Image 1 (tube, helix red, strand yellow):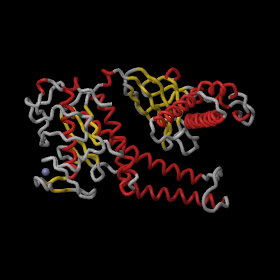
Image 2 (cartoon, rainbow, N blue to C red):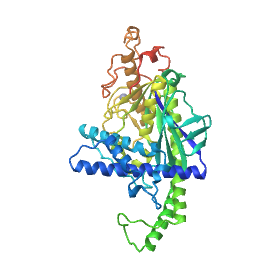
Image 3 (tube, rainbow, N blue to C red):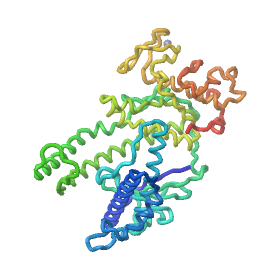
Image 4 (cartoon, rainbow, N blue to C red):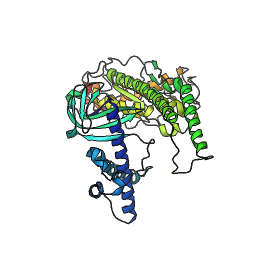
Length: 450
Ligand SMILES: [Zn+2]
């Protein structure tokens, strides 16, 4: 199983300087390769990464554009992995673009990278560095101190060094053997999770988990720091005699205070990201650890993000990230993840009698079923409906003779998990699913969705 560990580097000033130059080199080589790719494609040729790399290798120590003021090839001071990898990345970006276009989806061709607008990152191949406990030996810079030792055993495939708000990180990709990657579950629950805005996650047991909402707390500070930065930008514009929009290609003089302001803003944004990451990791680990099956809604996040009023709250909770983490952790814990399709009316169905409430508005936090009179909390009801999907999917997967509908009347055996829009016929009271005759060894039979 492929896992990555991102470790903070305690770099010296000289090492930070090299990292920044290597990342700049990677960006510049990418831009050169993309420009060359586009030029050749416009002439009707079929460019490919390997040929481009050869072409680049032929000029990189001679072409005036790649020589410093004294006429020396500065690329020699940067390790070659940093300027070889962009070619492979570019080829992958084009491949993905054509695949997406063939699939009929929306696709963006690879773009030029701009300093300050793209992540600062460069690659190191696995044979060019080694890890020794709390330190790593990287090409050209030697030993760097790490904040922690590598967490995973296994074969190291490669690493990248990247910057986040002035700090540098080493991301190590490791091929971890299945046995070492596997984790023991602490429970065999079956639950549904309603991801929401008012509370980040509502479980079928009725438990509501609030997100730390780091963005909301830090929003005031964010506004202050962005305002400070934009004032400095205005000042620089005024000094350059520019009114209104800055014409494309202009370089405004960068003052020390503007650099400081930008760094303060970036640090705050990085902190927000860290708090969010911590929360989603703890939530998704807990869900996978305690349950043999978890159903979540496959939210149409893009459509929801277009809703301006909701978008900040949704992006703050990080739905995409929760889903992504659930899926990869499920493989480690042997948990089934059931994705209810986005048209499954989880909040509109009455979890007691399956009547559909067609008039439920988005703002209604609680409602009463017109058919059976049950009173529902909107989120808990949705979570219970999702839990029933999980129960059905699990029963269909295990499909052991003992788990026939007659033997366990509480579970809806035989429902096709792919038909997520359908409702499981059996009623399932919440809180009763634990140890209610689910097969003990279900984790061996149940292969997680991927
Ligand atoms: Zn009802």
